[in-house]
Image 1 (tube, helix red, strand yellow):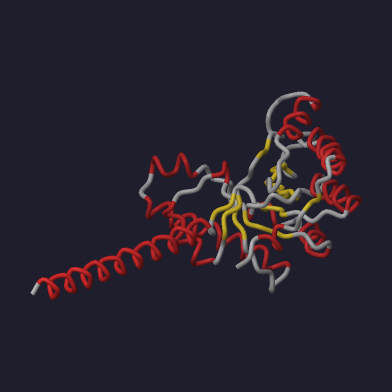
Image 2 (tube, helix red, strand yellow):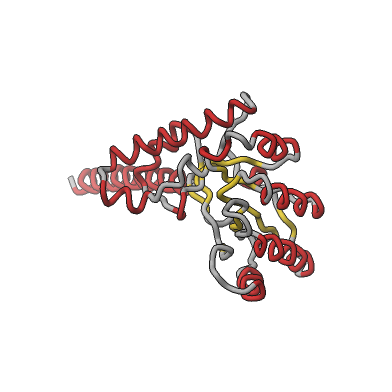
Length: 245
């Protein structure tokens, strides 16, 4: 009798252990899946970093950035605004021809932090989906076979409710480790801030869009920062090779 009870207890313990173990595995899987949809840096100890640019395309600044990147043989991600694509067809073609990656920065650069306060999540979902669709539509007028993989939300916005929309478009969110070129500081201060943020796997944010004269400082700092990174033994990675589907 005692032996029978002991065997039954052991079976129940084993059954419970299996249940807990499976539950842990499922939790880990779901967590890792969720983690893989959002990136603010690349998990590596290798001295590699990544350049990204927001708010283009721009006839002047995007082309100036391209010249700098070509000089140093660097590939970057350009997060473009849908409303600026029309009329900048040639800029988009240059980005693709030179092997850079184009991501979506939505259509209108709406502030979803503010929108979420005013409207329901469902309304925000629908608006985001429309913005992403319209941005892709503009890009496909220039290159019909383009495949957008990455999204950067204006102001770095991200909420879990976005995942449903991201899955529809098969997007991943790329935020940033450091960015500073929108602050009204001197060139030296801006340069120092970027240098201080240098670390393996860092994703750096610069801007290639804006009003006339707005990015002249960015262009100077970008070139100096690239040279500084090389001096420190870093290389610039192609983010598409580091973030796998």
